[in-house]
Image 1 (cartoon, rainbow, N blue to C red):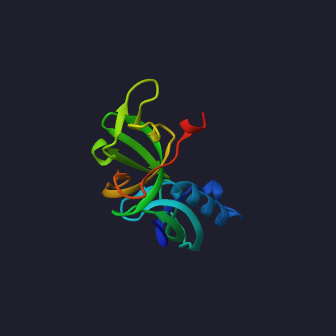
Image 2: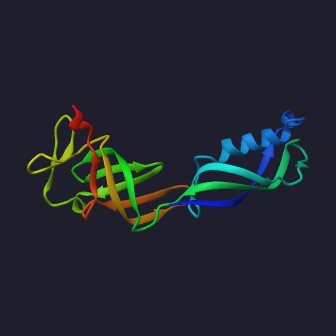
Image 3: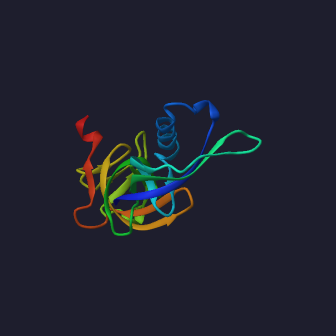
Length: 178
């Protein structure tokens, strides 16, 4: 799920950036440092939408770096929750199940959480195929899945998903176009 929240960060800036464009350089450094990162508490920072306030800088003794405390900014974050339905792209298939990615979140779907009529097929392109061959899950397939568990670390979020439910499964199969 996506949220729009206000976060705060302390930064250090080299003196060579001091000048008439100081605010723009601080905002650019903030975007470079924060966008695409993950905090276990809030989730993945997708984009910074605005900077609310920038604290007064303090020159640090010995280094000359400017320490800018309390930089408040608004951002969009993505954090998956148990029970949430996501669309993801399959990145790897093996006999244990498959891995898929929804944005930066990696989701594992065990073979026990794949419908019983799908069997693992090894070969050039490992996949899970229905007995009649009408549905195939392979690398680059788009699937709709349900999150049944999450594990949150300080800098990463891992999820377990299932496609063994109504209206879940393959959305788009790249092998069908070939």
